[in-house]
Length: 180
Length: 391
Ligand SMILES: NC(=O)c1ccc[n+]([C@@H]2O[C@H](COP(=O)([O-])OP(=O)(O)OC[C@H]3O[C@@H](n4cnc5c(N)ncnc54)[C@H](O)[C@@H]3O)[C@@H](O)[C@H]2O)c1
Ligand SMILES: [Zn+2]
Ligand SMILES: [Zn+2]
Image (cartoon, rainbow over all chains, first blue to last red; front, side, top):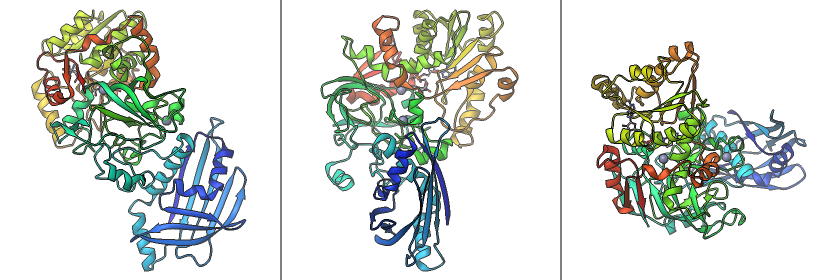
């Protein structure tokens, strides 16, 4: 599965690059990523939520790092779902914003897990990546992922319809959604 | 708290709902002192805007007192105790659209942007109390509201002005003004405004303030036309006269230089037959909007003129007069109002007495009577023009 998506963030290229390069930041806007831990100069551990409330964990290797231009990575050999990605940062024509171009490749294969992953991404895997980039923009431009009463889940905005009604959350629902 | 909720097509109900709380750090909670019912709410009531859900809190025109602010709100901008008017589009202040002052197209304020993008090609901003397509934000026909990006939108009112004088800065005064501003009004212009509802009335007043030679009000409700006439505009009743011929008469045969559509997708047609035909298409969803006014404005406007659309459309229209539009060099301008852009300049105009927003208020009701307010406003009973609710 090959996915591309692009957005423009109204922040300087260096800031957007630096944010992404600190891989620990990725889960703040990527829905399926729970955690990224840097383990060495070019290595990191990625934890993602998988179907049926499972977690998958894999090691990733940085394949490319050109400051303020491009970052590339791929999963290490033993990953259940081999994957790789690149992100490029390009100064937008306005001279101050950054175009973020993302390219992801998942080798989901034909096995049982591959099928489950494909299902997890749903009929519109694109939508998920587009929404991830929308949240990247929210975090960098507006400070955090925006919540509404109808869609209060922050980055876990999966559930489109029906949503909860557009009315304030009761205390216990609030605890469940925000953890406070 | 008590809040007026959507309860299915043609029904609103004041219910008990939880009090709002801070969900994002730049939120504020406002205790509402005045709120209003808008023509846009009727599109929700009548079921023309998809993605409404039972229990959605209605209302996007409100003001009140700040009772709580999130940790991310700069105290220099907003504090507990401030009296504020809240603009209906929710805008982050930092994205490309906000930087261009296109606040109702804010790229960051709609958590359901993906849905809006499917429907409109690109997403639109979050709006208070206006379906899940525009974010699923609870509205302001309630005792309290949560206001996101509270350091960007709300306008502080420090002057000795009453709620009624400033409440409409939340929507209809800026909307009417933007409708006139998009017309690039020249001193020789004859400006025709379709719809003598509150938005149309303010578009007319604004056209005059911006220097139009004359302003024409088109509607079918005699009491609304009388209200426009009392404010100095020329009334035209589309059920009594042929609109096109009357407009030619009033513009020396040229056609109005500038035309404003302040009606939108629920326009009625002078001819019952044509109206019934369009209504059926709308009901079976082969056409979602009834563009009578849009068509008539385009066909009436003089060559090279501007048609400014502030009436709301939601989906698709049939028989758009593309030939008239193209061959006669017409310009079409439109938008949900970029309210934040106009609030301060219009507050100054209110203070100077150039515009009097209170002139459209005909009904003042407690929040508990919101369903009755919707009923008389929608059905044009008791000469209802604009309802202000007090929680
Ligand atoms: N662009 C924005 O940001 C924005 C903001 C607020 C409201 N609006 C829209 O503006 C429109 C007017 O709002 P309002 O509060 O004044 O509503 P309203 O329902 O009170 O007024 C609409 C008026 O149009 C009249 N009308 C119906 N068919 C007509 C026709 N064929 N020709 C002339 N007049 C006709 C009705 O009799 C009524 O008086 C609505 O569509 C509303 O959604 C847009
Ligand atoms: Zn309104
Ligand atoms: Zn914005």
